[in-house]
Image (cartoon, rainbow, N blue to C red):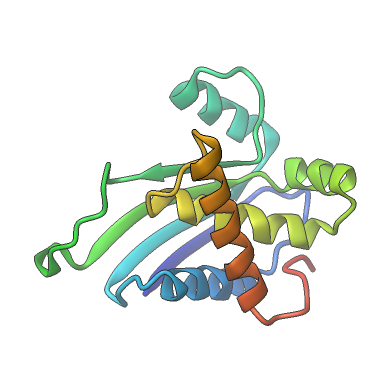
Length: 153
């Protein structure tokens, strides 16, 4: 798997290798083939607000956005290598979420990354049933990722 990762914010120090490993684990856990590419980027509040408005017409920052290249993932082997899309995360919003939730920034960033990847893979939370399925899978992945240190330096 090729995980392209960049950090375009200075608010929170990010352990890029940790998040790359979490992304690889998530994709493997979901049965995604090795010839797959995923991009993730950590951005500041201003950038995620611009993206949120541009793509969702919401004029406020958000914690995570996913940009899939597919409406439905191809099942045909000829479609590989497969470029899934992009996950964009705002660590400063994650920090605000973490304070409200009573968890660490690293834990919140882990949740946001897995959540964003699951969206790329077709999971949604538009209905209560879909939300239950997605949240259960998210929890299962995070519990399976046996790494105790948070991804924040």
